[in-house]
Amino acid sequence: MLKALSCVDIVRPYHNLEYVSGCKELNVDIFVVGEDWGKKPYNLDVDNFIISMGKKIQKVKYNSITSSTKIKEIVLEQYLSRNKPLINAF
Image (cartoon, rainbow, N blue to C red; front, top):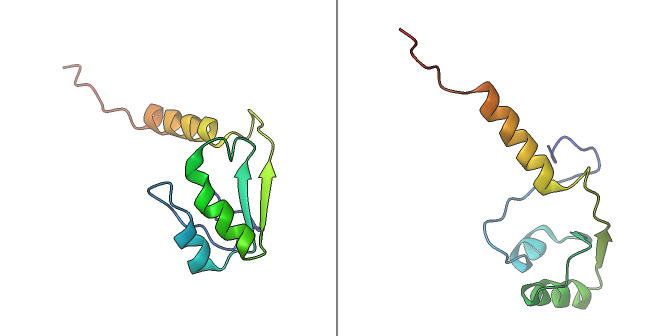
């Protein structure tokens, strides 16, 4: 879904909460985060890295309509409803 957005250059999956390596690899100019960013101590490394490089952290406000968690739940629900295994009724 993110790749389809014209304003997105690269989509890079991550499998843990370590973001500094991705920021270095992609030489990011802007790191976009949700408004809840910074409430947990694991964000300090990337915050410090972004700031030290003179880059920008852009926070976006939470919106239940565009919540990534909600979007993933809806997509999964739709997928599962269309791909239910057939039950042999014979």
